[in-house]
Image (cartoon, rainbow, N blue to C red; front, side, top):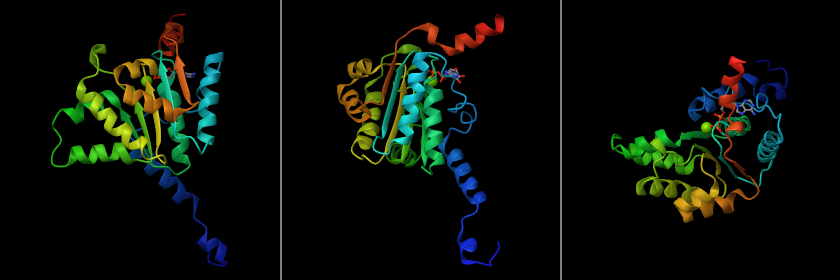
Length: 219
Ligand SMILES: Nc1ncnc2c1ncn2[C@@H]1O[C@H](COP(=O)(O)OP(=O)(O)O)[C@@H](O)[C@H]1O
Ligand SMILES: [Mg+2]
């Protein structure tokens, strides 16, 4: 470090910033998705894709709004766009956590957690500055969420609802009406907090980008 003037000596070096953001990515659980699921790589060819991208970009700029919801059609880019949002928030220095619903709920319910591991895991989901819940209420073979699934979702989302500083990003194969049907207390809290940042994709296999990619391989 050059110490010839006070300013240089006090300036934070870029490598420190890069290290910090690398650490944030590692701790978030999104390390494997973050390279591919960016805004730059989100193709907005069709109108519905443009709407998604514009909403997501507006959300990361909007410091007054802290909840984002995208529900519906499988393979339509929900995880992709939410990961891009979380990445941007981490670039702004926010600490984030990725919760793949089906996996984490299984761990929480399996009673395999020792000591206060369950409490610690729940505490992280309830208090991390940014939480991304991917595939909320997805269960094996499309089964209806159990009472304990609903109780855990309520405990996490209600804690975050009660702390307006926390950012909560949600994606689900269910649209809000279906979530309201599962549990009105959860659905109505989501509805209230997301405001205009709610995107619902009609269930239409034409919007499944996974099927499109495969189709192109054979064309
Ligand atoms: N608009 C898009 N531009 C580029 N790739 C996309 C787009 N939408 C989806 N994909 C790709 O299609 C695949 C499925 O998207 P994903 O976000 O996992 O869907 P979902 O979470 O809605 O099921 C991923 O590989 C994703 O990167
Ligand atoms: Mg997904």
